[in-house]
Length: 152
Image (cartoon, rainbow, N blue to C red):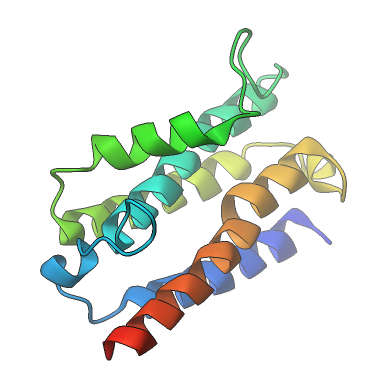
């Protein structure tokens, strides 16, 4: 699969994610139902990882390691909490705009990485999947189920 093919899949899955939150009001997006989070927090979490991995793509494009020295992503919980907390006072509609902007920056940075880095098993390939495609797929079903349960 080429970088462009992977990015097309990423766009398709991102659009599907947006559809899962379409029509929710700011108030509905802040209802806590997913542990300590609501939809706004989930979107903040995804946008945070977009931004974090945008920097990783920029480092890869410069020929550097994707993760800076001393940074450890093996325990994502505190990082996820930081992303959600940073958006705690952000209106949900603004969070949606930030999600879209962060995804565009993520894709733009991916496009600066050499094509061969997107072969299956390579770091750039894994980043597009774990931060994007698989991440969107992970969060869509719980949002859809919550909306169905709540009649939204």
